[in-house]
Length: 115
Length: 110
Image (tube, rainbow over all chains, first blue to last red; front, side, top):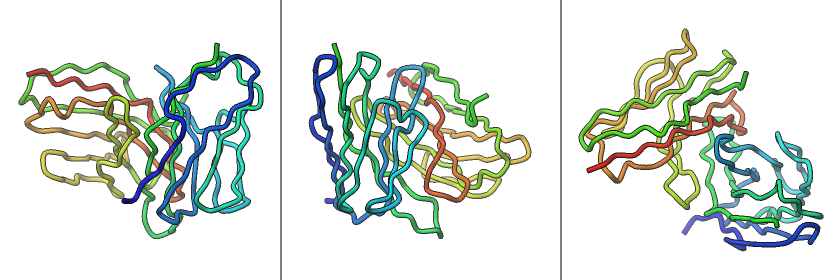
């Protein structure tokens, strides 16, 4: 089954304790992305990756890091989480064909609470 | 001004009603116009997309684009309680980095 998986699905942590949210896709997609979704603000892109070893900032990258060492994985790292990073996080992937608009396949989401 | 504006709602309608969901955008270079549906506690899923001005129909759903007004719509006919979800418009400039609207929450009550 084609899918994007994220782990963990729920996480409660304390300020300053480093954490990693994993994301993996099995569709051989080149493009992967992280979003956060907050009430009233919608989906905001954090980081994206065009392909292995190529990453770039989205709209709200502060406080986050990513890496893309393998095509299928795109972990999101919070080195020192703060309460304002409490949010619902989504990983997404898509092909990067230039011929068609690219359907973004989203993971199930990770609800993060930082106290 | 955000590039894509969408009223967050919520929009509450009775079962069987015709629903109209809308987005406006500011960048005339946008080419592809997509609608995603997001059920509670799930990730968004692509519902349909269109490229040009005009209408595109898929079952009970019709996507409409008016490039001259920079206005896109999603119509749902004979709405069902199972249509209750958040609907996000997403627009691209031919690349694979869509700009999302904030989403409109739709509630269809029996």
